[in-house]
Length: 335
Image (cartoon, rainbow, N blue to C red; front, side, top):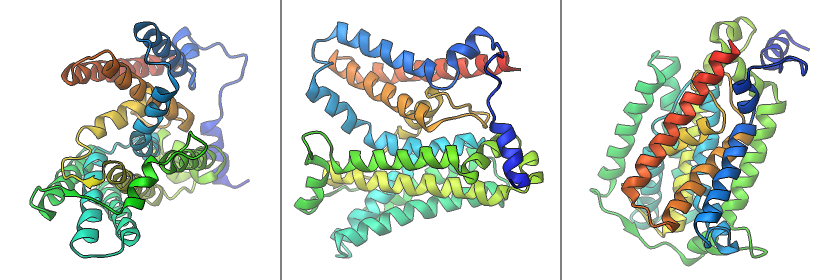
């Protein structure tokens, strides 16, 4: 085994089973805490409304979390390295508008327009990564600047006007259910998460991300190319934001420059609720799945209960604050 893998494995090695962690650490370790939270939320909503635990509503929740799930997968890798990406919602909107403009005004084939739209998302991610690694901008500032730039360009493309109407086959991809359960977008989401889980858990490159989040200097001394790995996670996050933009346009049958507004907060919330630490070095794809479902179930349940969208924003904000407080408590008891 190489020096790099030794160092990364040592950083990512769990404590011995007989080591007794404090109560909060035991409760919140891995994905158990979020899983219990999701179960409790589902039970509460089942009691509150008879419409929650129905087959059609369960399928509706899965469809609703597809876009958030794609964004959260990229954000998981970014947050594990100790970074943050505030631009995913704006990059999603930019990719949507590029898709619409190319297919409706430049008259490119729809499939080619979709490929270019995803590539635009990757370029935005590359700009974020280079801003963090080359110009040494804090991730918060680099991605905040991209948020403003991408949102502005998305509006400039059509002077703030939406583009409506795609080919019927494009819209059918998001609505047709195979085996009565899966849509194309949900299948793609499952495959992406399976690939992300395998990479983060079993590949040296995935374990290197945890080393970078734990200590960039230690990771560099261990032989990890920190700049390349850091840039890479932002590129992946941007690419997935572009893909999410294509899927959202597919679902809405339109491209809207205001799309994705607020997604950045939901994305970060899903990852943190899933057990990731904003300080880096901690996070799991399986935890992110649970975090995404918690956000999706919570929004769906509040809609079924007739709660105002404005009140929903307050609730989601409180959930974010609670998740961060639990993360702080977990880290304090781990020290």
